[in-house]
Length: 559
Image (cartoon, rainbow, N blue to C red; front, side, top):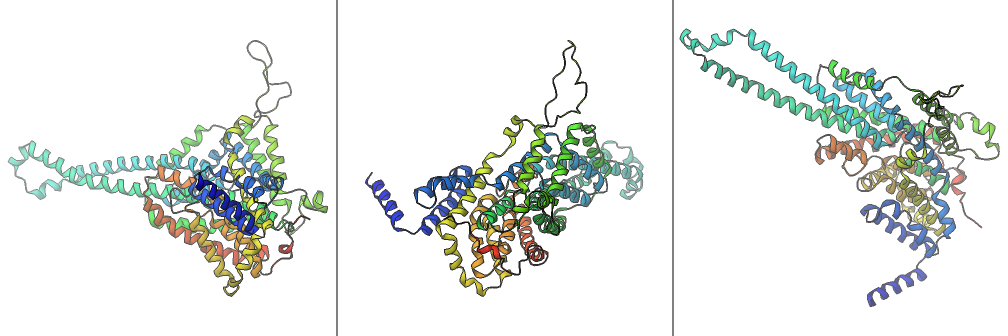
């Protein structure tokens, strides 16, 4: 008890003596430790600022609490509602199978097709859902290819054995030896065993390697595709929230259109290089593609004709994307600027996402009819069909804990700003002015990509982005390092525990940890190099990274 009292007194003394910056730094270190070890659930750890910031005198409780439901959270919720609707009506599966039928099923095309579909779907729905849906399809196709090749090899061998009459002549058997039935049969069986066993073993090895390659291609493509859109993965949303919090006068520099114009080409470049690397590592060759095509076609036929609900979801989905792109395209005034935003940024991407997602709770799942939906056997009028989404489905599938994770990151950013920790970190980074900016970006990306292998990408982004924002003190545009590091947080390719898609692929693909480490290490290097190439070329043009913008000096201080 005396030790406990001594500890409490020491903590109280430190709270009175220590600077605000040190107190905030203590909270960040504590949350980093809890997030890495997961000694408490990640979402619960995210609530620590609600308790510690007011008790340490860093921020008022009301100011901390309001950080947990910002505009970025609304964008995240709206995007997830769209994803839930797409999954609920299996629209994503129809899109996936249709694309695979168009691409083809030869091994190279099959891998490319699975990567294209996985990356596209993960732009709009969660990476985990994409991986969980695509891997069983890949497994079914590969099993059919393997069974078909085994049957074909058996037929080829039997045909060759029947036609090779010279086989007996080479042995030099006499007429009397040929009358002996047991000896040739035994010999033929032994010959068959010695010939067919190595073929079966080689084929098993080839398909085991192909299964590993296909499994990794799906999970890696899902992670890469998630970086292409603002709502594709949580770190992207965190970046937008942090920029809006730390630099409130940024003129909506990060929106759906601007992010897509930078991140989509970068994702496609990463996808092509990842495909080439995976093909080099794992791909085999097989010409029996008709049977695999049949498997995919049968799966597509099981879906039947697209019902009204799928068409309705697809229409809302396409309309949402169109509204996002045209809200503030940058080169011309968007519809939001013309209609609503002349006096300021009133309508944001989050506004559009919530508006369109609300339609899922209004539009019926069947085609509306003027005379009602008919009568049952008893002559009573049938009830109207359910809407495209209901709250029970949303409640079961919505990852509510992510909203708290987002809020925890925003609260850390606000605390760093209020306590002066951000300014102190910025002043401490002054010696880095001697290092070229591209080298700083590369080093930070390597650090973040390494850290995210043993921590969630959400926690990694929450921890690093407030610190990276301090780069403005050494005359570097904050987006020059924040954007590459945000994408680097999603480059968790080396360990099964790094991301849920990796874990799913590890369980499906009969993978060893070293398979993922060897393949993922090269992909990490590829990802870091491509994102730094992008930020120094077309990213520089899109975000005007050559000069420090005027809005970095505008803070969110309160009188």
